[in-house]
Image (cartoon, rainbow, N blue to C red):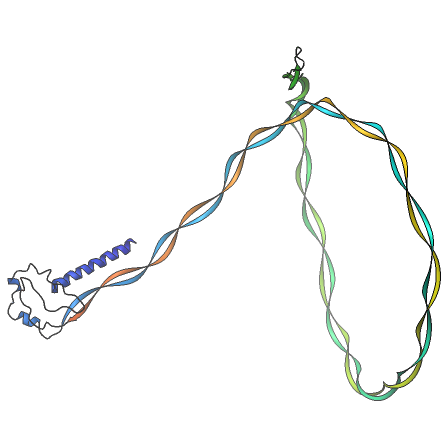
Length: 447
């Protein structure tokens, strides 16, 4: 960025210098303080300067070029790490204490009383009456009739035709060829190898060791009884009761405690010392020795001979012959017969009979009895526990990255520009200042 600002400042300075030089050549700002004598003509110099020959002047231009450069850029990466954090949390435990209270427990008793009342009981009787009616009953008869029908019966006839076919008959010949084969026989050789083995010999040593021992000691401890609330009635006023805290009798417990002590004892230890021994172990090496032999191996060649044969191939011809048949077809006829039927129809009669009934009616009596109960009253105990939690934190880690960038750099280029000759001779002084009558193409004259 600093290089870009420096290049822009240089370009502005070059443009300002070129403008001042052009204004000095053709403008009136630089020659405003010029004396009159300095503006007067000297011979034919003005006429010579405005001749017909082409004139050139140097013009400076600023050209912007693209330039590649590398710079280091800071890039921030987000990293996540797990950090152990120690914290304290409250652990609540529920404990219970015994509390005595008095309740009034209802006691229910069931009694019975005798109650006499009249009821009407229905008595049902079943009677029968005879009813005579006429019914029609169907009578079914099965009859048969002859029906003629025509069937087509197939008649199969077996015929034969002669078929010629060609078969290839194989002819086998047995030949022999000599084959060299290699067989192997086994040769045994006895060798010896050195085998080392380790044996352990016992070595007895004596050393002093510390043995943990101790004895049991009986301790007696007194545990005070709990404090409970008790209702005490005033002797002067039995109806007035007040709650008084009374401590229950304590208890004495005996516990056994182990008192350790260290005693030194001398013990005998036996350790095994390794010893390396060597011995020669024989072993047998078997190797195969090749033996070349020649034998006659038979092989069979097969040639095929063509032969023409004939065979009788049977085929079946089917012809249809019509035949008339007769069959019995059954059919059913129905006739109705009237019959007189007598049947008994049951019906029920009801009459009410009065009865005297006695029953026991239960009723319940309730009385209150006082009873002392013990209940567990919960209370909460708070304790602090230290624990370590893993907390995930995110942080930015800077790193340098090489980046390729493009910038525009100003450069001043000088070139020659042709100027037209002045048409007339410039007046030496106009109002005390030089005033040219022509201007450079592409530029603005300043008056």
